[in-house]
Image (cartoon, rainbow, N blue to C red; front, side, top):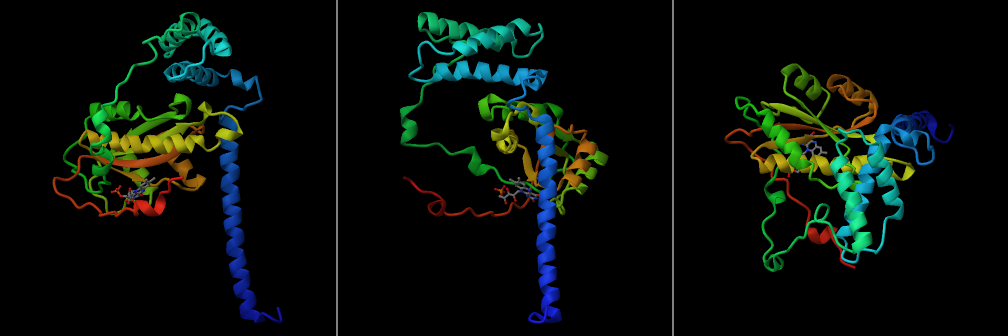
Length: 311
Ligand SMILES: Cc1cc2nc3c(=O)[nH]c(=O)nc-3n(C[C@H](O)[C@H](O)[C@H](O)COP(=O)(O)O)c2cc1C
């Protein structure tokens, strides 16, 4: 105190206090996220909880995927999948008649047996593809280059539900870990809901005429164990991008709206959009037809040389 003087002490105290506040806030958020993942994610070692319907669906998707993936490889092991075929059999036996994955389950079980018994690959689960050799010399333009964030929308041009549904169907072609597809989308079109959601997001001021606000969420109950704790965020980010590219491909504009917020904010979003506790909120998105004329930000990109290395 003597050495620092009163002012120095005060400055030191304020600087440290800020550091401790940051520490406590981040720690608090970690605890809330930890509780959510622990409650809704599937534990790796608790066999009882691994029998939940959600987990069984996840296991089914992963088993179907392991057959399809195995058969898509150039050097498929022969035979393979001794454990998988046992699980597929049980999954099929237990599947209700209207189980969404039933046909894929049957196809993958038959395909695995066909491979193991006759070394033939079933076209029900793998598709022969052919690359155009010319593509190496003349790569085509990418749709990614023409997408950009749109912030000025034509509020007089409503977006038909069929277009939004089709965009989600297309976005579902996004890759996900073991084909988990844990994504959910909410589209808010009613003014009151839209405005309440936008009021909780701090990057949309000055946007004009947003016809639809999307909210992308990921269901944690399709992920398991400590290793996958961050996977929902990764899969969710990939899907968010897919949705924006799908919308762009269909002539709509969009802008992702940063929803990296503290849990007290996301709880309010949960309440408005009726999002279950077991879903992570990945991002909101402004969606609509752009104004006929509008400005887009230049948004220069980094020089590829600075971010890329070949080993
Ligand atoms: C997760 C995420 C959140 C974003 N949030 C906002 C936002 O809140 N407001 C906004 O105007 N733009 C937002 N953007 C758009 C970025 O600013 C934009 O993608 C970036 O500047 C590149 O420009 P472009 O999308 O036109 O290529 C967001 C983008 C991402 C990926």
